[in-house]
Image (cartoon, rainbow, N blue to C red; front, side, top):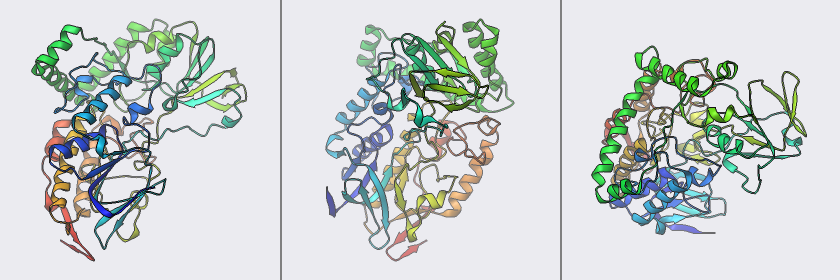
Length: 495
């Protein structure tokens, strides 16, 4: 147990993934060095520490899935795997001296704003307490595995686990395996599992739009050139970024670009799936872009293997020996893998965050989390979110959204560090105007169209995705505008 009640840090960062480590690196570049990074796990990496399933890799090109100030020059392939991405984060930590700021095994249970002292009190599960002028919440959006409440799940006598908690001690060779889910994670591990399982059943709730991945393995000569001439890497990165930015138009309904996306996905599907009945099952019945667009070269071929079956019947219950679907058919399995996503709307996970006048973040948000620029929430002074509400993308690298957030937050923390009597709380009217504009823009996108998507809450409001391009977001976050904030003082608010 640790007590730091006599020292007030400039900032405490919660989480040591891309969001948290990147924020730490930005602080170090800006001369803010009195901070801690609290990580609940025993290592850094975030999703790249947790997700170790077979075939785990980034579905965004690695050359744009890194920070502009710390290029991944040793990248081995265009779509890098889990170990390589975690390795990049280790190098980032070493480069910017983050090791001295990292504290592992620190599961933050609650953070409470002290209105008298204008500081945050942060507590962890082991009883440790930390004080900080600012809290930077880098929880992410995909950090809590979600397993639906299937009837009878507890009776299954085989092995069952979530894809983000892969059981590497379970050999799938010769096993009868069920994959509940067929989206972003499943398209990566299903081709691997199909190679060894005796039978593999993939339960699909809805079909996905899938584009070719077109994996490219860099030669030793190419990697050597990147290292010797980083500008060659930057040129490649710039070109891919521009193509991905232009791809944003595909997410807008009733556009030529949207129709082009549908056509590219159709061509890919027809080129890889000859069976018209299987192809029909794999054809989406909703607008392109309503769900996450996937990239894979080997998922469709895996589904055509003799030992693999795609099932679209809904699951009625899980039995001691397998799964019964609503058509009454029961299939026996040895292993069930839940590729059922994450609790993407619980941005703060299980952490209790208490702001001014005892208001909790749960109470403030209800089922519709919102934040100014995805970063600041009224009633929660000096709390800054990384990858917060409405900052996810469907067309480009999320890391390209994190970097401007880190710079913006660093500006705020630097301002607060200059004078301990300062505190910043975003003005409620500013947040409401921002949210209204954001939701109006989102109405033009496929994100709001009819489909079941983790982008939306149960009322159909998009709470995860940004409404525009990365460049538009960079402009919005380029400067901390103090007029957007109310400046607090002890026992009161100064407008």
